[in-house]
Amino acid sequence: MNLDDFYEKMVEFYPKSRSLVDEHILEYEERLDTVIFEDILFPFIEDDLMRDEPDRLKELFDYFEQVSEKADAHLMNVFQVTILEKIGDDKEILNTAKKYMGILTTKYRWEADRALGRDV
Image 1 (cartoon, rainbow, N blue to C red):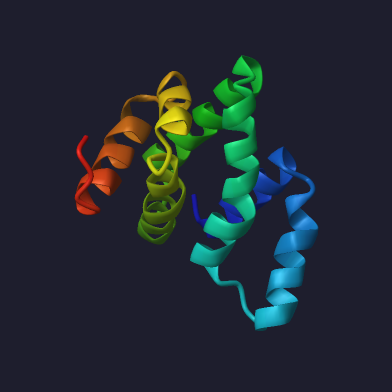
Image 2: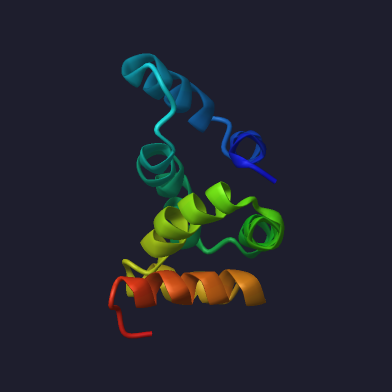
């Protein structure tokens, strides 16, 4: 699984993100993956976590567990230092996310927090 696979799945999950990603690529003349993950995709994920809709979050975090298991090194690095780090930025969001995280997603999120020096 690579970044292109991830983008396609996330656009399926969040159709409104497609135009934002396209605008980003036009503006920067390239795809800046960490910027897209943090500034475009994460706000959609954060909204879902704040609403705490179990079916939707289970589907999302089941996919994140697949990413954690099957991602190539580049995707895993970007996923871990953006999405998983940002989940730990807010205790309420983190507590909701923990209900849906699988074993690998939890492990990689913990590693991301530890790398930042956060208490885990």
